[in-house]
View 1: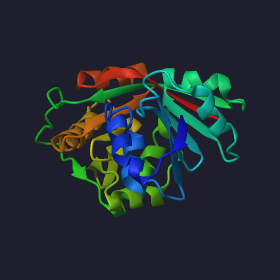
View 2 (view 1 turned 180 degrees about the horizontal axis):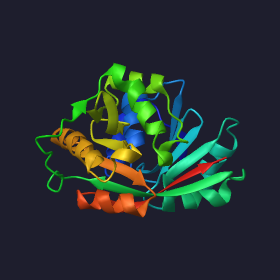
View 3 (view 1 turned 180 degrees about the vertical axis):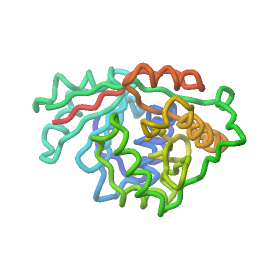
Length: 263
């Protein structure tokens, strides 16, 4: 049985998605941040005959996210997506998304699959040398961080918003650490989608002329240690094998692939 989830379903839903907090960083964060009566998001649950959840579908703005660790009513959830005129994106763990795809009537414009990794321990995070100063970002650092990201070729085409960065930093939904030289931010790492159980690491990069010095890794070390000390499981996406090798050296392990389909 599929039905829209309401506030009285909060605990059951959180218990269900919290079984895998890294994989459900977005769903947990959106439930904690917006609840079940927001105009920007809606959640549906797929229940078995015993009344237990077997899948959750979340719509945030124009994006649908699926979480379904076992067999579920893929056709029924796809019907919800197909009848939504604002539907533009579908994402989730690859094998879960793949069960929905045959029932989606729209044709994707830009399918993308990324590696998904998590970190639960600070054991392999590097020590920051005494001569390196890693600073925590404030709201008024948002513009400089975005400027730095746009100057890195692999991030240059990203959809960055200074205003969104400022709001996220101000409300504690994200944090960032950076390294400066001669007054300019040359390396940084950020979190996003922070919730009570997990957080996603994003925006890990260094200006091209300052690379190969381990600076971004030091920013990550500072950021990750702080989040892990708060008992938050960390996760990140990557599609570059070289980046993946760096993440694995500091304690991240692959947990699957994440599909992002644009329609």
